[in-house]
Length: 170
Image (cartoon, rainbow, N blue to C red; front, top):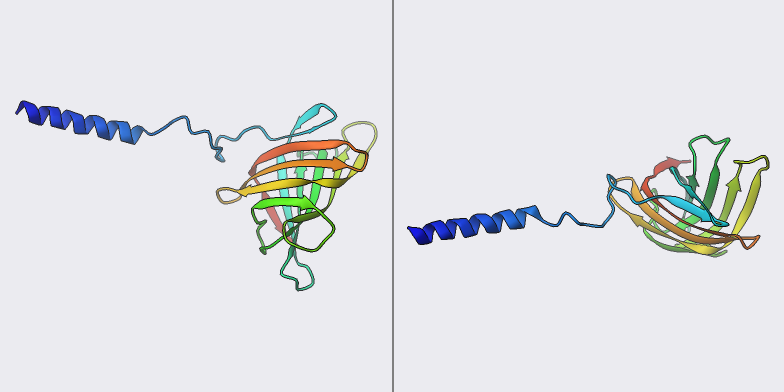
C-alpha cells in the first residue's frame, strides 16, 4: 500500500511538472510584443502603425508588387514614415524572408524607399538607396519586420516593427 501511495505521488508530481511548462519563453507573440521603433541620427521613435499595400502581379512575371508603410503616429500630418516597395514571390501576402535593395524585378528585392519626417516646421524626405529588410510572418496578420537602410544623404535608418499589419489591395 505504501508503494502505491509513493507511485501515485510520483505520477502526480510528474504530471504537474510537465503541465507547467516554461513561462520564460522569449519568443514574441501578438499579445506581448517587443518595442517597435525607428532610429535615425541618434533619435529613436516608436513605430505604432504598419500598413501593406498590394498592387498585383508585375507584367505576368510571377512577381508581385507590395509597399509597406511604417509610421510613428496615427496622425498623418505629424508623423515620421518609412515606406518601402517590395517584390514578393506570393500574391496577396508578403512572403517571409530577407529583402535586399536592388533595381531588378525579382522576388526578395525592395526597389524603392523613402523616409518622410513632417513632425517639425519643415517637411524632410530622404530616398532609401541601399539596405535590407527581414520579414517574419506570425499569427494571422502579425508580422516581425527588421530593417537597416541608408538614405541618399548617407543617413542610416534602422528599426523593427512587431505587430499587426493591415493589408490593402489595389
